[in-house]
Amino acid sequence: MDAKKITAATVRADFNDAVAVAHYARAAHFLGLWESERILIDRFFRNKNAPLIEAGCGAGRATLGLWQLGYANLTAFDFAEELVAQARFLAEGRGATAIRFKVADATALTTCHVIRDTAFSGALFLFNGLMQIPGREQRRAALRELHRVCAPGAPLLFTTHDRDASPTERVLWRLETERWIHAQQDPRLVEFGDRYFEDEAGRTFMHLPDRREILEDLAGTGWTHAFDAMRTEIARESRAVKDFSDECRFWVARKA
Image (cartoon, rainbow, N blue to C red; front, side, top):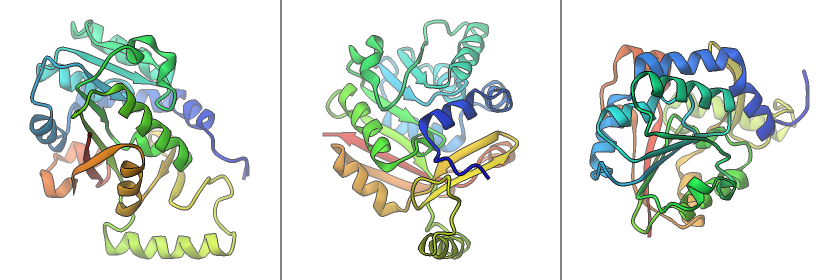
């Protein structure tokens, strides 16, 4: 096993890999928004003409779903160039050429003038995108950057896993705790809560927090917690959505 620590470069390479690009392009083309996403978007993003930003847009699954719901002022970005290229291609095919797709890093948004110079009325970071940033301080940097480019009162909608969400998860993480205590964890991992695995989507890094961690990170980056709930508490999803994604926790915070 390569013991080199996972970095942002690792994650970018994994998302630019052809297997991952094909996986997320299929989801953008065929799956669209989840029912839970639709419900919360409708609840917290009422103004369809307000400027919205989606971080970690991938191949455009949620962005194109927002467009189809009538949201007309959308900026979306990802740091994986191949995914952004797919998003632009799909948008052009659907006549959604007004969507601004950019290649940008959530931890350093000042490098993109379109994002830097706009005060967004809301932000989204869906499908656990925030949790695919290695290192807690880097995830906090992304939260600070989104806070900086949003207007006062703007909502932020994002998702995470929750390692306390079920008895099975709690047992698995107790075992993982023992591995870390005895230095037997995967040496590529950055911190407790990390996972790195390979499946039909290719290689995936993911940090799985507990609820307290996210509340601390929101408070530490200027966001005010407004709502959180597990996906199954919000909506009953289709089989296609369940096959595509595991259970997750939705979060909404606001810029004070």
